[in-house]
Length: 559
View 1 (tube, rainbow, N blue to C red):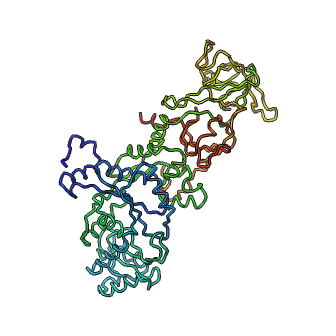
View 2: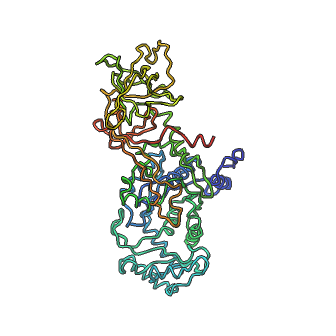
View 3: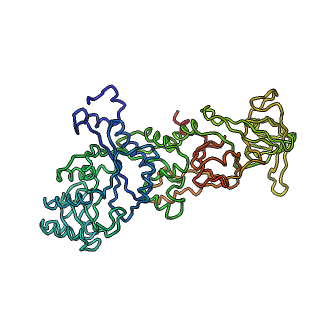
């Protein structure tokens, strides 16, 4: 395949590398990537970026992308996480060509370790974890060799087999690669490549009591699968020399590691350990809490998968870490929902309005367009009657001059219905709060049939009190009050937890059609924002999560 220079300016640096490899005939013109999550938590927005890069590259170059679970730590991994990861990847629209597990290669990885021992490039070390850390020195001070570094090949082989057979307790011995204790790269200072861990594995059971470390399992797994381009986030750049050292000394397929900037989004964190703490301390309602930056949380909140993919692609592929404005994600969500979400009416803070000249007992069925952006979605009908609810904020007793909503002596239109003229209102004597507003309507002002000649500058949404259904509405905001909550050395990230990130409205009122939507359905509450029916939603107990507000500050800021 020859290199196409006509679109070179549009290629990111990974694509440029791949096109150079293809032009040179490397790997016989084959492109093979992989996505290798560890099943110790739910996928988050950072993983979404890695998914779009790895699966996107494979698709772009007619290659293949494997899904490989890096399941080398039985302490933190489970099938629950495996299942959630597969569900999330599929929901984002990615399709893997093969499903593999690092545990599939445990026998082969053990053979690789034995090979290194036989070559004099690995040894069993009896040092404690603290002693090994001390031996490694600091980035500015060379390390010191372990007293066990020069054990004979025969002794190392015997001890390593004993480790495998369970002859030694946890933590008593490790296998280390013999690389360079004076290297400025700390990862090359005789890294631990196997440790004893007598725990049940979710796939291999109790067959193994030693498990390979990430740096030993990762590159070799890539090589076994003949991955041509191992694409990973930037924090692994210092691991690359060790990645290459193992491949070269084992003389196996030369996979190439390429690093790109990770997805850092303002007001979000992507450390699974820190996210797990939020779950364990009850600050959020599980991994799929709609405030969480997990894919499961974003799905429950109502984010369309296409919006997440578009966001990742808009953020681009860079060589340096940077902070992506969460507003770009919200913009991507609105962009999709504006085109797809049907419109309904819901009143979150109700104020009763009585239309005094509307016949008692009369009910009309108004025609409401489901989505003005998509005529194919058709219409639905909503009831209209003498008593309605409007938003309390849509009425003012003494409004300013340019206030175009409901106020005494003023006209205002009800969406899909009539123009009302506000006559008066009643207050609660004890609290002074407005309890009820009285209006009249113009019978010949019905939307689509208006012959009244009356003008109204404002348009309000509403629900018929007689027919409205009570619903729970959850208003979600950003989980943290700081753009970069984990960047402060002198403060814990939990100090920036947003106590107002969830507001629950238990007595909102919705038009009847909304009770019959299905969990996961995405829609717009007119004038309020985009919402999603929660997983717990039922016709008897409707529950809606706010996805995003209607206002798009990011698009305005970036015009």
